[in-house]
Amino acid sequence: LELHDAVETSVFYPAISANSKTCGMAGMDMEARRVVAKAMKSLESMPAGAKDWIPYFRAIKAILFRHMEDEEFGSLDGIAAALSAAELGALGARMAHERQRLTAWNLATIA
Figure 1 (tube, rainbow, N blue to C red):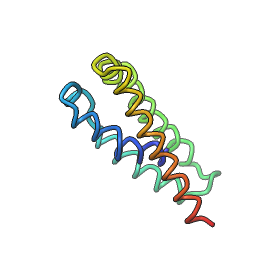
Figure 2: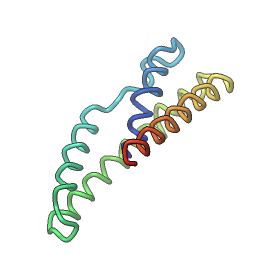
Figure 3: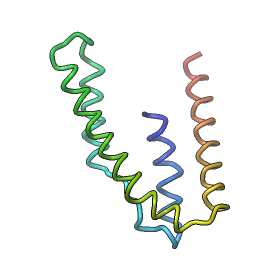
Figure 4: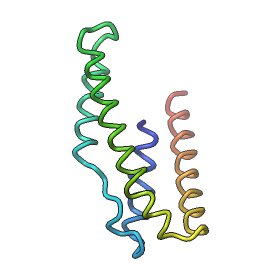
């Protein structure tokens, strides 16, 4: 989730916002991000068997699924229709490169 979020915030949203054909189509849901970050911190600090673990997990899951549905059935369809195949391919390639870069960086910091 963190890797997806990092790629989304560093590549996807800036590219969509900077393109005249797609600016305004997708905005970061900062409230959902704030709630998920808070819930994740709580979840990370409690043992898996704690009575609050499942409710926190379910809350995070519900927020994430709502966010995915909003993107999948809302802004992403419009973005896909607005951009050419070449533009979509270039954006996808930039996102894949960033994912690989972040993954390599994370692995290097763990080692």
